[in-house]
Amino acid sequence: MEITEIGFGAWAIGGSWTFGWGPQDDSDSVATIHEALERGINWIDTAPVYGLGRSEKVVREALKDSSFDPYVFTKCSLVWNEKGKVSGVLKGDSIRKEVEDSLRRLGVDVLDLCQIHWPNPPGDIEEAWETLAKLREQGKIRYIGVSNFDVDQIKRAEKIAPVTSLQPPYSLVFPEVEDEILPYCHQQGIGVINYSPMASGLLSGKMSKERFASLPADDWRHKSPHFAKDRLDRNLALAELLKEIGKEHSRTAGEVAIAWTLLNPAVTAAIVGMRSPDQVDGVIHAADLELTEDNLQAIQDFLAENP
Image (cartoon, rainbow, N blue to C red):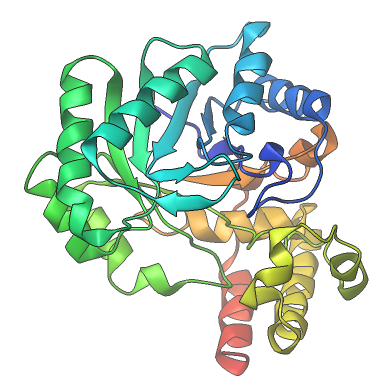
């Protein structure tokens, strides 16, 4: 697959659920997807659990009347019961059911990419990966990948079938995958599509203490350690630096944050969440942004002074 360096992240358009982003209007979501595709983005990343099936259905609705035919990536391993409680399951029968349910919700005959969302429970990784490999052979899936895996877990999967891609969290706020995971993927030729390059809005340039305090009560970010008081001041100060760098290039702080992740040679593309059409304009040019050595040094200095 030849994918654009920016992809549409469909987590937030799932609306309210255990790890949701608060209320979301489906018509806004559809309009946002249309805007992103018209601006050149050629892939969408979703998951069954986003909104407990809602995100996949909204993606289907958006593509139903679209003249574009983007790649659609989804996931498996997180399931929910009738009360909406989410749990991790990697048993073969469950994986097969999830894939069939995703095909139905998305209204497609084959999934372009299906990823194990989380490696939990870790003892069942092999069973899940064998199942996905068989579903690929049966023509239900074109490519199979993993998300939130460490190197040892990737190696376990590779013994069974090739890993097309890894989806890890990667940003200036959580760069931990630089140490071992990204170098391994680069060495092995495994594609990397990182999520949360703007650290869930922290580095967008639009977040503030006041805005954070006003987020809906069911917005999962209230539970995120990166938004906790001791870290919030530091992360907002980093966003201010990115905003200043962005001004030099007539770009947003968010585009600087995304561009920084794309500089890593292991990263293929970044998943960027968008909830309204106007947000597309604030991120779409990130892949074209060329940060200078002075820009990168300023960022590095900040990180050294504020670990």
